[in-house]
Image 1 (cartoon, rainbow over the protein chains, first blue to last red):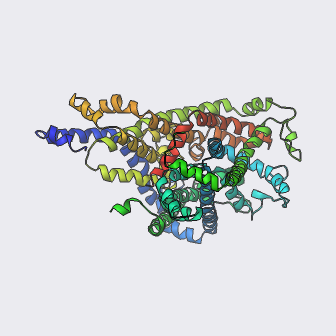
Image 2: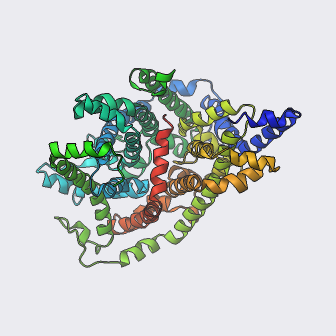
Image 3: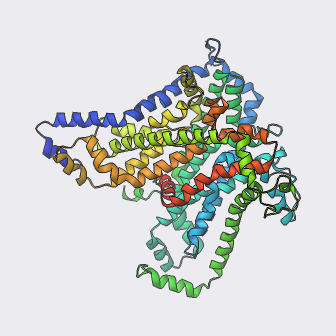
Length: 309
Length: 298
């Protein structure tokens, strides 16, 4: 459709019109291109050099080769923060996804007041992360907090929550359930784009609720579920705000997450080289898991377009 | 109801065979989920209005008695929150103007103009969507430091003017969203204008952009909200007290409140309210934007 105009109209001086369009296009993308070079690609290259050097911002930068990476391998806090982050990620990502999917399935029903329910379930997700960090610190307060009041209600013993080394990570994961809104809305959008005719056809064949879910809903939803998994894995590997505000990495380093450790290395110890090495290691870890997800996705993600090919 | 003719009998049949037990269970589940969602917000509000000391009563008193509006005044004057909010607003507004302008420019080019490298460059945009921001954080900080921009708003605003991500706001997503929207507009619009001799700039600014208001609203809302909430960026770039944003002001100044949760919750409340207002006044755009994120997976 688009090609139709240019050749018919501009054949005599095609090169000039095309040149003009090219110049215009690059003017339009210039801000992005400059941003990409100066704030993404350039810094990424620079951070390779930084990761191979020793620099405290004050004295001249000193290239030291792979020393930072060797140090990381021997650094207990590096391993601990990686473990904490992996724990947080691999528990919270699937858990939040299942919760969001469950909520989306119920919220996709044709019920009275359904729009009010959707709004209410989404509302917590718009709370600024700093506000919600303080709110949940107060909720988790062992003596006067809402969390232990809820435990009373359920006849369960009180907990120290984020102040208990064993409970700190589970507490933060639990808190994350409060903000499943965006995932829920994305999944809901996916559910609503599943053609009704598929369900009707299945109903004619006598399929029950479970069969419809398993053989229609899940396959049709799988590209969106996959996207949710990829995005939330990248995000939760970089968890920072909660630990910085609520626990300062404690108790007993139980919530010393990777980016918190990186932040301290860079901005408290002023070890820019080592922190850059840490950033690259995290990047490679995230990249590895993202690629792994792509690999595995071939087995379970169903793209409608594939049928046509 | 304007339901399709085929759906109505099926729905009716389902209603007959399966009485409303399912719906009742669903309503119960939804009521429970909604309660879990709302109770913490109610608790924040209630705490913010309690007299100092009564927030520690056990069992919990849900209705504050007396109601102390003064908490809000005190909380926001003990620390200079007027300044903090002015700073937050300045950053969020200026960054949002930039994000809307530059992402729509790039989106227009990717959707409407044919140029060498369009495909690969757009792939690059999508790739940056997956890039963990942490890997560019330190070098970017060093760049701004060399430019003498530490303790100014520049590092928090300028990236948005270069269609670059800052904090939670993904500019790659904004460009993608704008491109998708431009693609839905009929090409006859550009073609007719070009026959009349209009330049690409006029087509963008006078013809297509006015039709993009829904997409611009989505990008604008998300940019504003993310910049309002942004934490790590201001934490790194802003040092002096007078430059702090509300989020940083509360996070770094909470010690001043000496664990008086009435004050802390009062600040948390005022920090949340503008976002709640935006959410309710533009709920349609809000939800649309999030659903669009899902479209990226298709």
